[in-house]
Length: 87
Image (cartoon, rainbow, N blue to C red; front, side, top):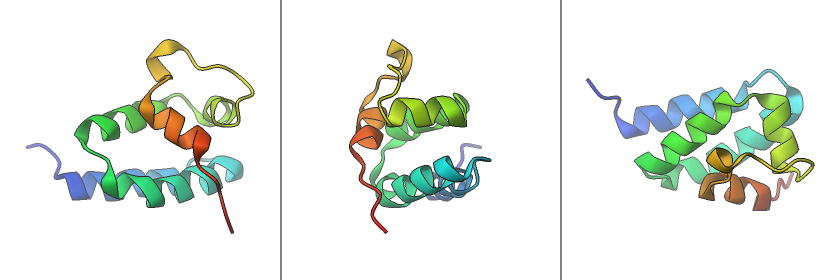
């Protein structure tokens, strides 16, 4: 049975808050809380694939220190790159 979209969003937000690296926990957690509630299924797929890339790589891509491979250079990563973490 497919996972309900709201449950999937909550699971991905939780996963974003506890990635394993404090820097990505802060960035991805805030990003997920701000954007995942409005993501459609396709965007959730792309975000989940991004999470599979691993913390150090995601952080480098998000901060523009490295260019992502084409399969990760999506609308979701562009949103992440433009996301401003405000405390």
